Image (cartoon, rainbow, N blue to C red):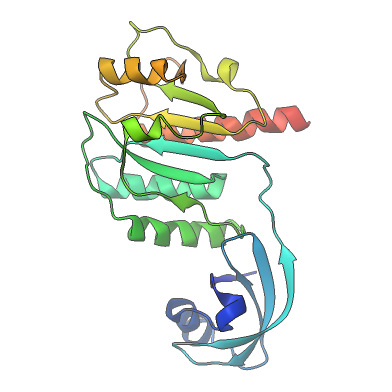
Length: 237
């Protein structure tokens, strides 16, 4: 079923302009047709189209259904945005599809990109949320310096992945404890600086490796997030 996104559906009983246009102009829906609307906060609404207006389609809510995420813990990935925007956009799309609670664009000493357009990333995340049939939109933060990120989620298991072989690391799968809140740090294309690694480890992050191969930033972030879900599924099986 095609999902429509309206974060304030209960208050407004209207679809946003983009979703109104898609429903009325593209799908040619008419008054009386039923549709599913998600609010991005974990609830899906079965609605009936009351006014097929292509800019502000009005709906009547028939019923609501909780759609919790299939994992219980908070999974957060802090990753330095790639030099090319399209790679970061691809990563946000795929992490949303795989399953993530919070995405934190990370500002590091060696960051190739020091600014990010969160509105564009949120639009991509909304599309990926709908495509993957979720009802919860991940939080996408603004660009955040590493010194601020290492203060976040102090009660969670926190890991930092880096390439420098001179600083000891352990395999991510051996470090990860399934089912716990998790914060993962992934550095820029030039890796974290030695001082950044030192400060991160001093803050209590566990040093991990994602294998013997050198991975692109976006590949490393998706690899680590996917590993969390795989290891969690083994716990439940």
